[in-house]
Image 1 (tube, helix red, strand yellow):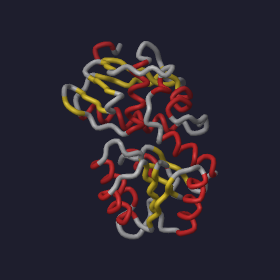
Image 2 (tube, helix red, strand yellow):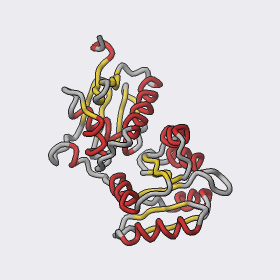
Image 3 (cartoon, rainbow, N blue to C red):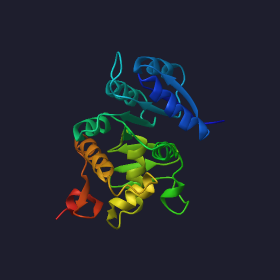
Length: 234
């Protein structure tokens, strides 16, 4: 059965073009002219992935994204928008989108990002072998169930956040470069757009601080990131 994608964009030409690209790659695409219609459809049947424009009639795409994320922590969401300011991008990622694609874009880039987010298996994280549980400090991840527990309480993570923390825990003995994260988690060489990793780390840091966790995602300047516990920080 083909993987299903819901797309909301008020421009018919854009909807038709994206649907054509993805349908040619074997995806089942259902389009909507506004976010409210997409949200209503999600209440009846969840797709494998959602794509949202920001500026649409009725409820804007960012609000739809936030509501979808609150109700479905593991639903992959991509914002596709002509709004390309750093503020718009960070806002979209902060509200729960897994990726932010700026119009215009190449068909190959669209398909590559969709495929990257639709990866549900963790096999690529470490030579095809995934432990039943991953732990660091008081954080425990269960890849098979795709659940996270922090300080003995459930922790809500987006799919990309979950993959990032899984990879960092599995390589906790060393720092991980931005390029390695981009190529491993997103399956793309985004050397010109390392903000994807930086934005995700900022979001995770806020979640950890909100739970008063002693887990830190340290920045290794000019290289990448490493996990540390507060008492280990010099």
